[in-house]
Image (cartoon, rainbow, N blue to C red):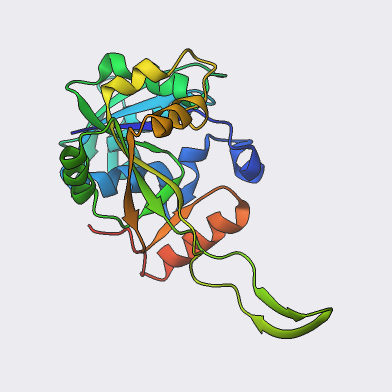
Length: 257
């Protein structure tokens, strides 16, 4: 099944890194977070990717155009008939990557609608280029086919950010460290969609998360696939550090390869 990934935003909340490169190219370990996302989908058998580019999209194009060069040990023979020998292989030889320029200022819904020209079939996978998960992607596809709605969103409970105070009037009588997970669910950004989603997106200026999803929900066309385990977005410098720490410790929950 094809996977559409939004890669065009400016990532202003991670300006320390995104001033120099698009957020999907910010590294976790020695590979961009985009590679980790794609690698995760590939472990479930989904290796046909459509990347919706915008801000500094040429860097993503260059990365995949020179993928063999970027991921291999090489020997160069210089001279009038130069030759390159690649000494290492990679496991991504069966990936298909479509690099689609969706505009510098296009909103999320607009980028998604533009990608539909390259989507084959009625159902496809969709996500953002800045979040990681360990959800069962194929189980979400099965769930989507069973309910028959236009959209399935993976509902996640994000890590708690703040501790809780127990008050008696103005006195603090208890303190709890921040919980591992919030009690409420949010949009985790991993979707299974029917191409009819395009009918709900007006134009390039339409954010997917506003009118389209609100209208779909009002029409009972969105179902939630609940996931209570690992999920983490990379919106801030601290979250980027946390993901790198998990990866460096060899305990990354999304690493299935």
